[in-house]
Length: 218
Image (tube, rainbow, N blue to C red):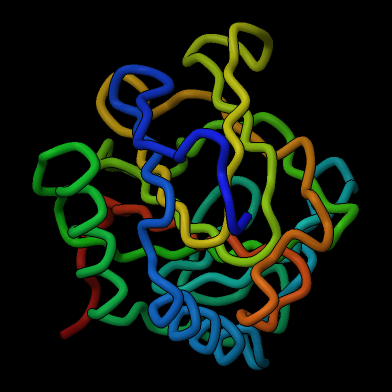
């Protein structure tokens, strides 16, 4: 929005969870979007994720560093074209560590996983926990494009209590500490709300994680 009745400010929806509005400026959003478009191309590109029960996720996904599939990680796209996962760039890891430091005031280990989800107007994400890693380092989430309703819950159940947070293009959300394994999801995307100058229809979410897995190779 060009004018806000009340300015958006940094909030802490739960202990260890921080929302920082407008953390990425317009130039950095454009750079990240351009990178996402490159990562989305095959091989090991954007794919539809299928669950063990035969369902499909409505948000499409591409991974960097380690390939996530329900509910494990691999070095190849085992549920897709079988090619090696795209490398995780050092600059993205530095962005993640800066985000964790500025949001939580702590130094995270080196980030080595990115899950990039693309939501069209009808896509959503059910309540889930990021629990397939071997590290409890904070999760960093960056939003590009359309605004979404981000539902942040508790660590015990997919049900209430939860809080709905509006995430817009450029927003940062970090959760660690007592909120690291909180259930969260995206019940709704608001089509047509992306900044016009960004040139994106839909929403991209770039989620950075620390795997905690042994280093393989040089």
